[in-house]
Image 1: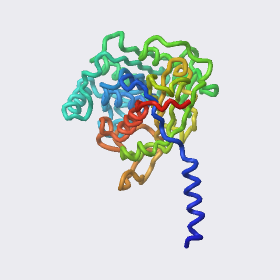
Image 2 (image 1 turned 180 degrees about the vertical axis):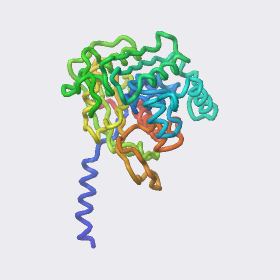
Image 3 (image 1 turned 45 degrees about the vertical axis):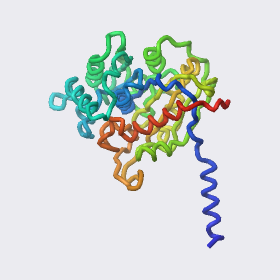
Image 4 (image 1 turned 90 degrees about the vertical axis):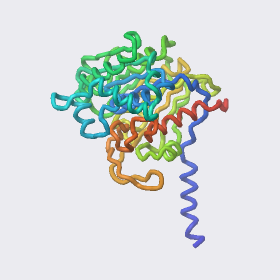
Length: 349
């Protein structure tokens, strides 16, 4: 018996030896967090912003909509929140505000007063046939309830399809494309740079290259602690030169559906356009990752059915009825990652 167990023991050791390293403590500025995302990542950026409005200073959203737009229904997500019509309209600002008031009164999200004074950057593509422009318009109206005119920027790109718009991916799709990996080049449009400049204020010029470290880290501990079945095994963090010693700001970038590392490798984390700006401006960028799930998935003690074959972020409740709140498994996990990044830095090079 002991002889036959040795090969299995060797395999276990080999897997452990090749596991991704843990997320490092970097002493980032815990009170200066910004978020952004595209498509499902845009909806998640809004959810995280609202749920943790005392922590988050601003959000950049491409092709996303109002808080709890789907109201826990995948059917409403696909109709009212992506392709609305007269019979299936986008939830009104009044409806969204009522949901926020209800969640805040129950202690599920931060008080919405935390949104006052934040900064928001929105983008809609004129050739986007996946998330209708009216959904982004509704998000604009939603945020204007709390923000002054100069705090909100709404950019429209007439020729853009449904994608992250970047100048940093040499293999980016044409501007009007809506095809994997959903990273498009629209001449002169640097979405990451524009949204970061609006959220953070004037930036130093983009670095010639991302000379810091793009670290793949083990996401398992955060997923397991949050009881999330929708997160991938590995996530990423970009650490600019000099940020190991602490004091840098942090930005969370949420990929869209069909953009997870399990689907397109590192294309989003290297090509979305954040890292060179981050390098020049002492900005740590966290890239949490979902994974495709269609069937029974183990999370915590018990398996549960998860339908998310495109690795979207949970903006309709496939993980939990609390998906949009501080108790949402994915929001819990990302918050724990931010807490880890804010822990005192080790100072290692």
